[in-house]
Length: 270
Image 1 (cartoon, rainbow, N blue to C red):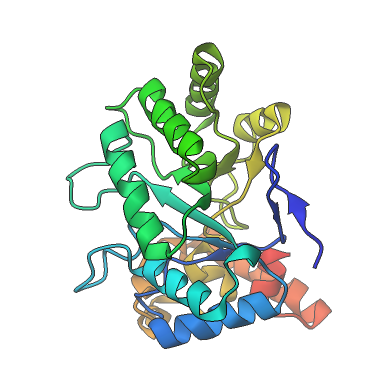
Image 2 (cartoon, helix red, strand yellow):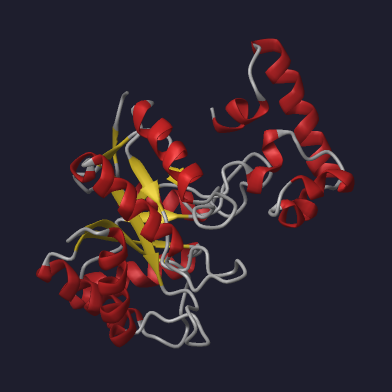
């Protein structure tokens, strides 16, 4: 499968990145392994997870997704073929989003242990942390890069002003910059990327990967009304898409899918 270079990094990834937020939640280890095997067999190579996945599920503490991915890579002996992307900074019990240097240093070691690897290919700040200066966060990443614990750093959920500020601090202080951005982006809602943020990424040669490409499953076409929400534990998360705009998007998906004999999810991700 054709691979694309991610921004200024040397990482080359397939056009589709596999999101791991269901591993350890709606997908147990057996199902997760099956999905991961199919992913690899299809020629895809980048997996996106986070330390917090899936802390929200009853009985979970966080780290379940990373643990499953680590077990899978070890059992398949394919770590060298996989681009591992994980994130830091979500509330893992500390009571807030945290990108402090002290927290990052502890969190990366925990992620490395769960993933059963000695290096993370791409380490992302999961959310903005207003309480921690960019200089401190980027300084912590500089230390991780120097120690060989991560290969590249990036960010998720920053707007154009926040990303610009982080880039300016990196330049002024000679610190590593965010090389990759991960915003929410899909056919239902493109507003978080299109416009100034995308323009900034293009101007600065920042790689972009997205999340919620299927709008939490809504763009698969299986959720048509409130009665459908019970199909999955994730169903309630889809309720916000069941509106006039959502129905127009589904109608367009249905039309294109029918013309090309494709599934709605295939069209949404094309």
